Length: 174
Length: 436
Image (cartoon, rainbow over all chains, first blue to last red; front, side):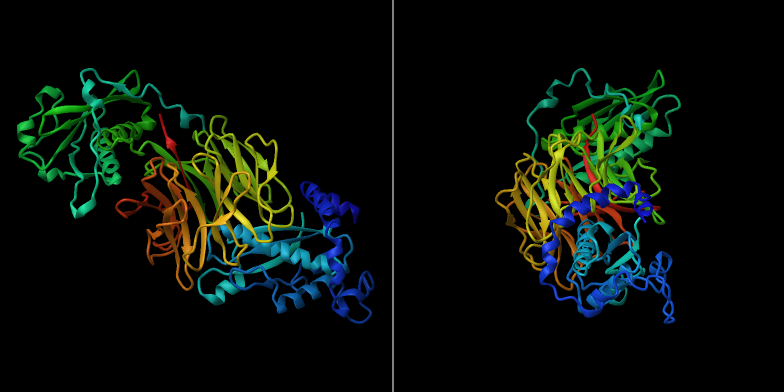
């Protein structure tokens, strides 16, 4: 797994710097009551499919059945209740693949300005990262990247489209 | 990119016999409902051998440049003297008697020819009632910069009539999109000549001209992450300016070009930092729970306008360049973004998004007073940038369906599309300095 971290070459500097940053944040998680399933499954049953559960590995975690995107309200980087549920499930999966480095991508709809949306997308990614740290995911295993309004999931206008574009999604850090 | 600055600099040479060109400028205003614009006739230039193609083109560029200022109105060819068949080569042969019977108050006489493979133009502006030359310029350029001959003459004609040179010789940088790729481009202010600057095959956006026009700072994903780069037009190469973890974004030059403000998220929030253009001495300027972004310097470099959501919705704030005295200046309701500080220091333009309405271009005094909209309910406006003379704003608007560049003239409120970018999605303009 060490190899995997090293493979991100250019990103390695990022990861190391984030690790330094993360140590300063650890105390913050003390007063958070974690959902019960968030703390139980760490590192157990890594490759076990004896219960008919799918194998969670690097391929599945970034696949269709893997980490799910979360969605935001307009002009907001506050985590909604449905986002917190999704992040809790995501954290459970992430814990089953030790050493994996996750890229959290923040996206916006195309309202607001391009300039502001790059900052807003980063704030969304940072909010996700901070919550996953609270759920016990190592800070040095997550990097954030904002795409602002540059990479919409869905083209078009109207709330139905915008709602799908205001999101944070997960990718493998390269 | 060397060629972009290789045009011959011999440029503005006063033609003998026009010493009185420096007389007191005439102030032009359009107040009081009277159209006080100067009526100017710009006939095709007199063409030397092989220069015929340039003859009408140069006249058209001069006419467009003068018309753009809002200080002149162009006399149509149909109102030229009866039987007009072109300007005489000899200026002594200009028939002012015939021109006085037309509406023209000013008349342009231009000649274009080649000398040793370099284009040379002699341009004169005449006061028609007096029958007197008021400006004379001899300009030289390589043929690829032929439009600059017209732009530089137009700027001098504007200087004569208003006291401040025009901006036709300035350049703009912008992000041009085709498919999923966005590259940085440089163009004449009117998009008459467009040059692609980057070839990253990635998303490169938000170019910012250095004050001397020689460098362009921008943000790009070319190395996967959102980092800030500086493109040197002399060497034609880009160097990384900032590649901290997370977001590196929104570079803004100090007026002396020695430092840049920019946005980083490495400390867990989007905050504003400053360091020198060669990358030394990073200092954090803002520090609060809200996100701060979009810094721009005042013309004296003493203050920074920026966007912050510390009070909820994003609003424009102003602070001293050391981060002290941070205070909000926009109270239009909804959100405000994208501040741009005028080069004369007096005004700040920004984008206002009232609840349930689109993004509109506004201008206000630098203290936030006297705010007024310059666009109304036509598509979405973003990313304003001031002309060097503080008389115009350029911005992107989606009014035609996809983002394109437009100008708004402060005094008249006139909004025009910047031409000839139809094949590109054009975003995030930066208005550079005049070319000498």
